[in-house]
Amino acid sequence: MLTKRLATSLPKILKRNIGIVAPALQKASDPIQQLFIDKIHEYKSKSVGGKIVDPTPEIEKERKAELERLARQYSGSSSTNMMEFPKIQFKDGVVEK
Image 1 (tube, rainbow, N blue to C red):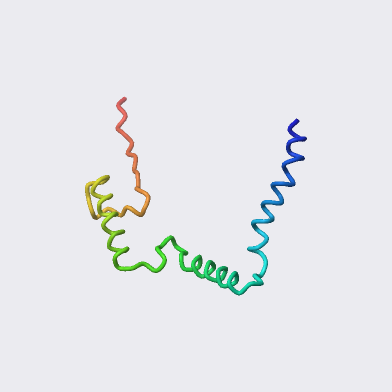
Image 2: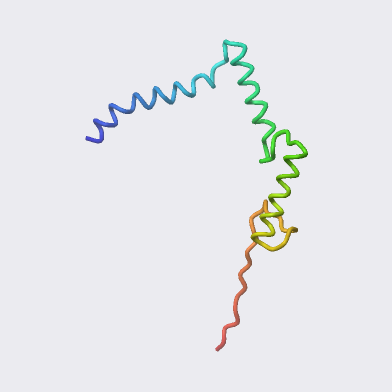
């Protein structure tokens, strides 16, 4: 039963995936499509490193305000870096004999 279902649905899945991926792998014949693809590649190259692409001063100010609000809400200090994973240290207790 599973093989019959797989045999009927596999061609559909392959056709869909190839239909989605094939245009991205080919060179666009339409100049508007090529411009769109070039802009996507340009945007992806700018966004490397997890930073905001082309931020305005208002966006940076809002981002900083939100990070300060989160730092106050969850750690009580605005000097805490909310963009890094917290360092957790476990201390061994004294064992009595």
